[in-house]
Length: 604
Image (tube, rainbow, N blue to C red; front, top):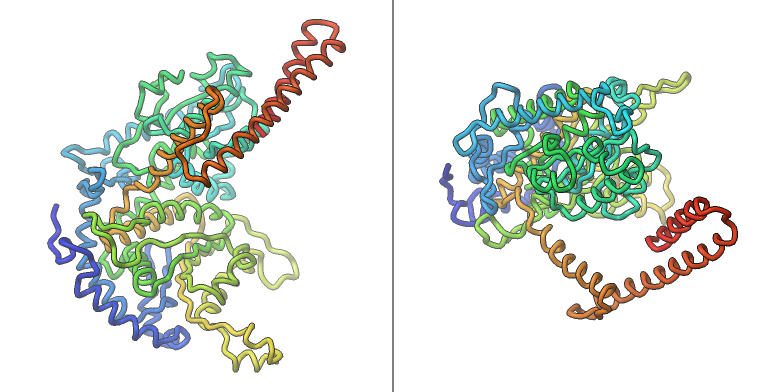
């Protein structure tokens, strides 16, 4: 599929549509939201509804004319055609020569989605059916561990998109009454960081006899994931013996050779495809397997159905009514024209506490680019810094900066029906209503602000008036969900996935590669070898700049001191135990305890 547009042979900033928006910025800078919000017809035109979701973007620093110009920009950038290309299996990830088909992961059985001349849906549903069967076996106790006990606890090992997306979905459902009932007696933990502290947190309170480990690594070569997997394998074997691995560890991977070499049964491996990017993989076996083990496959299928509903809307809705397109254009407007450096994601639901970290990776890894698809350096801002925290926690953390500091557009996300209703006698409103009072108040506070006149009318002392004035005119949008359950969590996921893709479509960048992640990894390989050579061959640290050499030497010398201390502990411990232990069995047991203490001292 080819696109015919003046922006195809260069940057989108060279088009008339882009220049028209640049000329329009000065007009917007002369307007204030408190005045724009008085226009009832404008506000009405900026409130949209789709499948139970309400989107209100009337508090953006934009007029109806602005959105007409933004839609013209979308047409100039061939956004509609690029959406169609994505759904058709075209290799739109050009730097890696891959299709982008995470939408196929949630398509219903019977839908045809073609890629490179074949329908991918048969393989997608083969994996889903395998997940359904395996998760049912584990949950019902048909599949048991080495000692015959039911596997009630799951540790999912993965990093980046193999961790943040599944964690978001798991947390969103954790306090949903129906999902919580399905998860009763079960525990799901995530292990991502190679820091051994993360291992300690993941296994705290778990019994190896009842623990199943899910290793998520497409190639089975991701450094952090494989090291954590070896650590968990050692933990299991220490209690259950080497034969336990096949029953207590499974993989989400396509490298069956390495899966088998690791000691796993390749039949217990769940695959996915090159057309699934890591940060877009929640709906693949990466997320669906651990989630199905926790909540059951039927509940997780509702999550897929919610995402698919937004997929269909994204593909078919006109640009002017298309939620992901409108959201994407709003971000382009704020970043590239109003020069806003960041976006705050503010869910007024504690169950969405892991939404912002997932969107942070999804957005910043996708659109943190400096060149267009053809390699041309961008001459405009693209990408934004994403951060966030559930309300009202964020209000007592960083809202000060949002109200009186930098200009940061905000996404407010609210829910009509709470997962946990609390109504206290004598209170004006319920606990959830109290939360939502803030959800409705904050956007208006940001938009309207407080003038000197208003501050003086409140009797504020003159010397404090400048400190208690608020400029207002700070943009936000609001998303209101009917409830937060598996279906709406899936909708929310797809909404942000496609919004981020639209931004990339307009900016002309590749939102589906991540070459910036690779540089640090390659440099770490050199440091790893340096550490090994220092400890095994006594080689000095060299071939680094002064600062890195200094810090690396300080680290290695500090570790050497810990090693000497640990050795002293072992020697002293052994001498003491020889005089206290009457039998060799007692001595062996005591030695193991001293060894563990010394190891902890060394690793500390």
